[in-house]
Image (cartoon, rainbow, N blue to C red; front, top):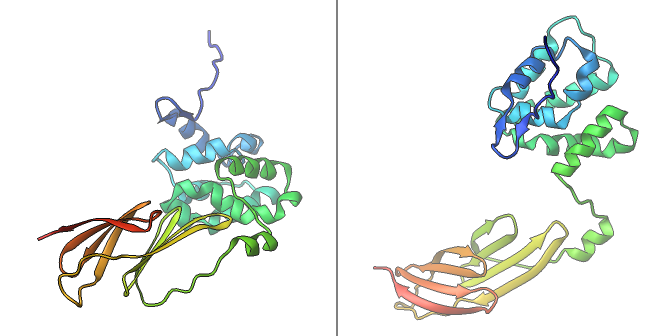
Length: 233
């Protein structure tokens, strides 16, 4: 006697393993049974597991949907077109799936059909975006005039800049704009009159400079001071 068993999830969170058997079974029937699209093509868990499991890419997905005699309805056709326009990105960066869908669908959120709207809602929980008005943006942005920049570094939370007159700038920002700015003159003992800073490495609030005379200078962004200088030769 056969008995029904509960389907395991597409991905086991504890072991970080994908349910490849279930993904394979759904994949070969993607274009055959349109009544299950609610749990496959319009399902964020399926799409993300499909792209991240290492077995498939978005181009495989679109190929499977292109074969057979199935004629997609308007909602499905529109979603597939968005997948098609983002294939190159998603083939290389499958983690971008929620962002790519939000980017394309969010302006029409109030007009989307039910299945697509539910999919975008799930994407928003995995890739939250904060929308700000023009008024909020103007209040949060700041201007800072920098000249003679010889090096600039940008990461997820900071912008660092070094100018040729040994001035160092550190800007802390978020999605709303600039939060704090630090500026200080890197004052150190020069062995030669024309000695200057060539490069830096910053792990906020600490920053390490390398001079043209092979000296290492360590500074503190918040305190705006140099705390150490060592020869590197």
